[in-house]
Image (cartoon, rainbow over all chains, first blue to last red; front, side):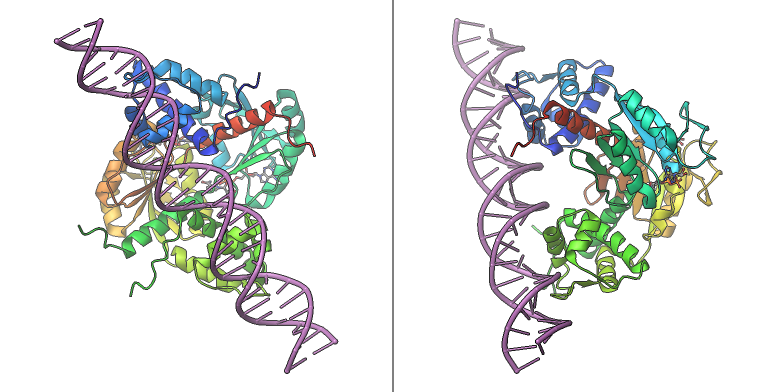
Length: 219
Length: 219
DNA sequence: GCGACTTTGTTCCTGCGTTCACAAGCGGTT
DNA sequence: AACCGCTTGTGAACGCAGGAACAAAGTCGC
Ligand SMILES: NC(=O)c1ccc[n+]([C@@H]2O[C@H](COP(=O)([O-])OP(=O)(O)OC[C@H]3O[C@@H](n4cnc5c(N)ncnc54)[C@H](O)[C@@H]3O)[C@@H](O)[C@H]2O)c1
Ligand SMILES: NC(=O)c1ccc[n+]([C@@H]2O[C@H](COP(=O)([O-])OP(=O)(O)OC[C@H]3O[C@@H](n4cnc5c(N)ncnc54)[C@H](O)[C@@H]3O)[C@@H](O)[C@H]2O)c1
């Protein structure tokens, strides 16, 4: 029944997640319709780009009217696979890891942390975000028992690669890495990197560039 | 004297920050030379792309030999403006904000948090990462006194836009936003969004897509 | 019932980023 | 001193994302 394998671009997928969040908020607010312009404004993107993104899902709006909020929300949720909750494991319950474990926003988007792991015996057993931190020895069995496919790494950079190896060996297929190192994982495993220092440095560079070129347009 | 306005692409700037981190590590390890292949491998990018990125800085390698670690590091640091430390303010010292304030990795890359702000009286005065949390009323004077140009928002989404308005009014020109909302800022102010839920959802989608298409290549 | 307006979906195009591939240049070697 | 291998730097082709403009289509008003 593979009548279509649309191959949605990754940049579009990221924006779909944003649209989904906006639509959920609109639905909670009682709205039933939105136009592409309004939705694009709320999502911070161009209206034409938004319509192009939505065109990957097939026609889901009504010309002259706009989009039905609940319908579009469910359609995007279906494509993104949000209807089913995803089991995740989090390794490294330090400052950042504890904040992530305690964050309610993931659960409301279908992500459950079903295991928090740390190598420090002083942290094991401590309750964070409603569950106890587990020792690393339990990683394999928890991943196997819960079929967790997403792993989050919030350990120091020096050990991130070894943690990545353990996660992939345990069966994790997707990894979100906060440690400032490039991880190498076997084929078939997706790794996404979040590097906050890089974000700050890009901002600093743009600001410095802006300051160095005060001459803008002179009509 | 505008003989060149190199206009380095933003994607390249982000990678330059990664190269800088790798080079710093190599220099600390005593290495004096690297080839583009080795550096690209450590940074997780394509060697040809790395050389193209570096070409924006002018010739800085030796053919047949490679790049001198210290020289290249200083060159990139100069372009990125890392030699001068950047003053930043952080608003919203909750779970995530406290982790950011306590993170040593920013300081070593030239970013100093010179003000931590929160609206909750219970949090004001508490020491986080070596300094006391300030009330929001002090925002304008601290920004003015320290000429901070970068603001980080780690507040709930509902108030992020108002915090953004206050920051820009105080003189902040660059904003890093962790709240899951699209911010609108006046022209001349750069806003970068970090949305961790979106990262997880992209990972989940890729994983689901991979699972739905197990047929890969059959040579 | 018909026309006009509104908004979607699509198409074209421009620009950017990425990749491959090759020539130029330097060091080491004989 | 000349040759050879190695690595950089750059030029060209490719694919992709983003933006503007246009046609299709449905609704509202008369
Ligand atoms: N805190 C931030 O705001 C921030 C910002 C950007 C990047 N990061 C990165 O995120 C990562 C975590 O930062 P943090 O501030 O939470 O550090 P942290 O030191 O507070 O926490 C690290 C945790 O990892 C645990 N750990 C160490 N080795 C381990 C191992 N082999 N297996 C499992 N757990 C192990 C430690 O016990 C500790 O609890 C670091 O790589 C850091 O560079 C953090
Ligand atoms: N914690 C995470 O791991 C995580 C992950 C993804 C996104 N986020 C986002 O980051 C933001 C912060 O998350 P958190 O977990 O730290 O929340 P939190 O509730 O722990 O902290 C929010 C802080 O902001 C302060 N605050 C509230 N209103 C304010 C205002 N008007 N001015 C100044 N400060 C104000 C609160 O007093 C509190 O200290 C949220 O928008 C959240 O969606 C957090």
